[in-house]
Length: 358
Image (cartoon, rainbow, N blue to C red):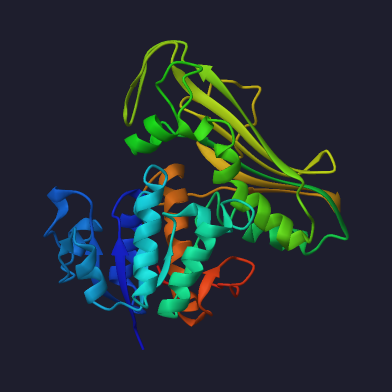
């Protein structure tokens, strides 16, 4: 029996999720929502970059998506810069009795202790009213900060620290909003975007810290964050434009979950626009970028995750991984109990049905 699914948002992640929704026999695509007027009316196959006609035309009317009565909505619309609107969208969909999985509302990955209880309760109430489920995931925060470290932690006899890292060159990343408005590339050093304002990193990645702590059965006393910026040595071009000399061209930030004064759960990001910048910062395990999980304990581990793709570079492969994680959890989200679900609640997704002979 196929699952009726609609997609909201056809950006970098959403378009790749759409590709699988169109081609995967487990799903019946009922609708596609887009924010761009230029995309309205276009066929889902075209928006997914496929040489097929899916027979589903894009709309910018959320009511039309809900009226289509999908079993589940894949929510990949931008949430970083429109959190209230994204939260309202998700609650509206849940109230209508439709499950939600996606990446667009990262605060719901594990919101307890991260956002005020009143906002969590509103989402839970919407889910109860609609007898529906919401599960937010991705790469980082996502499976690189929960599923993979939990798998390694399950083999340890003792754990002193868990550190997860993204180490990547973003020069080929073509999302202007993320690059300029969220990450602050191309801005003056010290001109901090919203993400780097005091406490915001601790919210954005607090979900990863709190969920890891819950899985380890420990209490985090506080979450601390810090950021470093590195200027461009001269003008150079990246996918989204020109980075001027002296403006931000590399960033390192860190979020620490403190237990009795010690950083026990740490998330670190090293993001460069050129590989020669700040060679003293952590280096990726492959050209372009990788993810890393480090556990200090008995035994200790260092695990490097190196996404690659035949259709794009490391950034494309990482976004593809996020889309795959989202889409492949749909059957379990549809089967899950109502409410906010997390990696701690969800069964292991094994890749069943994904084998494709070459």
